Image (tube, rainbow, N blue to C red; front, side, top):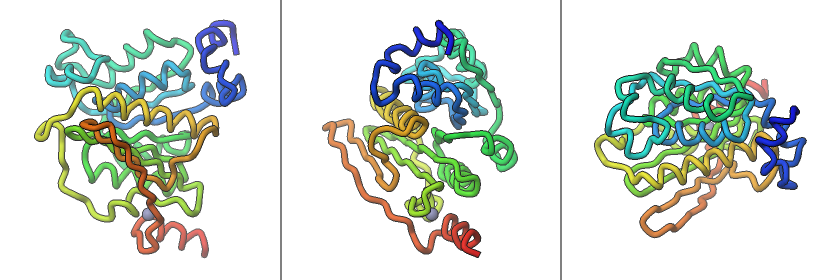
Length: 253
Ligand SMILES: [Zn+2]
């Protein structure tokens, strides 16, 4: 670690749970962030600041005025530009010790197959059920931990799935069927809650990379922004899950 890195990351290195060894793990990690809207841009900003060595950002969307209520990496002058490109520039201005790859694409099977073999963690910041199920399938197949979050109106939800652990549930264990999407564009979203959940998502990524704290695997964390109540619900593997049951059966053979 060079002198600039030692200074940049000094406040994390001072934490016994991270220290220099943990910081080096963060610096050597590759994290794929899918979706660069409210959750993704805020989470990626924390991960870039913390020194995640390689960030791969994937998003197909462009910046609109209604995004600026909660997506603070973007400015008025950025309207109409690709989120992933503007976010990459924003993050590069904050940390030039890391590398960032920008994928201006919808996430696809081909991209997941290309990038998951080099990823340590996937961060799902997408806003639709079909994409979440697709990401989950490949997370299970490639044994890459998945930190998934969503926010709608005043409610936020966070899940950590880790298919390296044979007892871990997957996203499809929890949500077996594709559901009708409840999206911010139709239902609204409370801006501060987006940042709160994105920060929790980044915290789970750093915990996974370094290996400290209590794992949230097997828990569904629900945060209610109106009263600041937090619920931690146990989530078990579904023995009939169409995704991870098939995978474990294949491994057993
Ligand atoms: Zn499953």
